[in-house]
Length: 116
Length: 110
Image 1: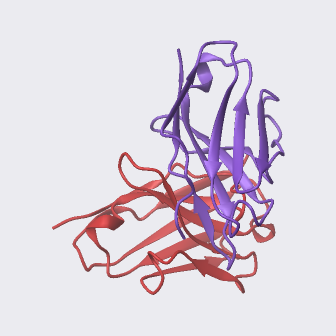
Image 2 (image 1 turned 90 degrees about the vertical axis):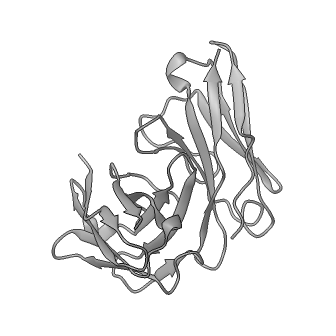
C-alpha cells in the first residue's frame, strides 16, 4: 500500500532553516507529481509546492516562494522541502502528498514549530 | 491566490443529505474542471473524496458526489452517517501552476 513518511520536523528559531524529507513506498514514485501541503494549528489546508515526476516542473505558493525549495531524488524514492528564513507563521504540520491538481495520498505529517 | 470560500459549518441528521459549497472565481473553480474535495477527521491526514469535479476515487462511497456551476463547486453527502462528521476542504487548480484550497467546512451529523 502507499506509504509516505515525513521526517525532519521540529523546533527552529525565527530566521532559521529546516529540511523536511518524505520517504515514499508502495507505488511507482517516478510516475507521480509530488506536493507539499501544510496546516497551521487549528487552521485549514494550504498548498505550498509541487514538483513533476522528473523534477523539471516546479511551482510554489506566493507565501513561500523564494524561501522554500522542493526537490526529489527518484533513485531514493524521496521528496524534500528545504525551508529557509522561517517565520512564526510557518508553524504548521507539513504533509507530503502525491499528485498536484488532485492529491491522492497523504503522509501523516511532520510538525514544524518556529519559535524563539 | 485567494482562498476559495466555503461555509464554516454545515449539519444534517443521519440519513439526510447535505451540500457544501465552494466559491471561487473564473480564474480557478470556474476556469478549470480540476476541483477536488478532501475529508479530514481530527488529528488525521486528509483523504481525497472527489477529484476533477465529480469523480470518486476507488473506495469512496457513492454517497459522496460533486458538481460545479459557474464559479461554485459543491459536495453533496447523501444518506448521512455518523462517520461522515469531519472537516471538508475543496481545492482547485488556480492557473499559473498554482493550487488553492478553501477554508474548510465542519460537517456535524446531528
